[in-house]
Image (cartoon, rainbow, N blue to C red; front, top):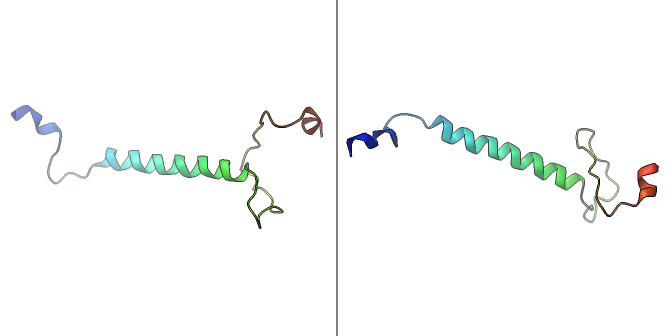
Length: 69
């Protein structure tokens, strides 16, 4: 049982543990923003413009005429 000391060491800050959560939070917010701005707008947000940094997503519901415009 003396070899299990690598699991937790008292006094050391868990940098990798916190880094995984930080990267996950950034990824979740980024994906959420892209999904929000490319979705159907809720009431009151219909006329708002999408920011330039949000990419356009092509869906199967779009007709070929919309792609040509």
